[in-house]
Amino acid sequence: MHFFGRTLLATVVALTAFSAAAKPDEAAIKTKLGALGLAPSSISPSPISGMNEAVTERGVVYVSDDGNYFIAGHLYQNTGAEPVNLTEQKMAKINKDKLQGMEDEMIIYPAKDEKYVVTVFTDTTCGYCRKLHGEMQAYNDAGITIRYLAFPRGGERSGNFGQMSAIWGAKDKAKAMNDAKSGMFDDSGIKLREDLVRKHYELGVAMGVSGTPALILEDGTMLPGYQPAPMLRKMLDSRS
Image (cartoon, rainbow, N blue to C red; front, side):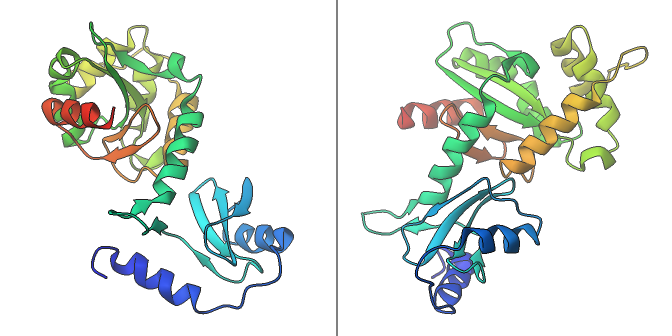
């Protein structure tokens, strides 16, 4: 039980709490999730009878056929040697699709001998983001290209929302990011790109980012938190 913690307990309680309808009532599901601020972009059967997989702008939720019960958590398949996180697999595909075509909005630090590309949601006031940035050469030397998207953790209420908007508005964005991460950035006279920073932040929320740095691998898998370059390279090699 401790492996899943509260998520498993909530799942067990919810799955025993309702009687499944004959077939999904998509109208009811959309209405009842919509009342919670969750707008499903798709509703499809889940591996659990009587439960459906609803993809929303806040991630995947599992909802009963009548819409009266839902689970906000991860669904695991426990039929092999190790449990498989089906929700994570679904979100990885969604995340990968969301990042397509955004390269022109990213601040990219390319590896000369590129083996992997990792997209990072970053915040200039985040200590571990600064630590990661300070080791950029190590990532590049390890064959890892780092691509930044903006994620001021408090959204538009963040004290550095304007600074990050200036970084994305700078002519030399990589230099602006270097200066900001070292505390030497001068944003005077720069046209702010609040639209891009807001877009990136909302994208991060939709992808489930709750803190920074958040690393998105090429297959869309998210790794929360700082990873040293050697450890990240070793993990990427093992996945490939």
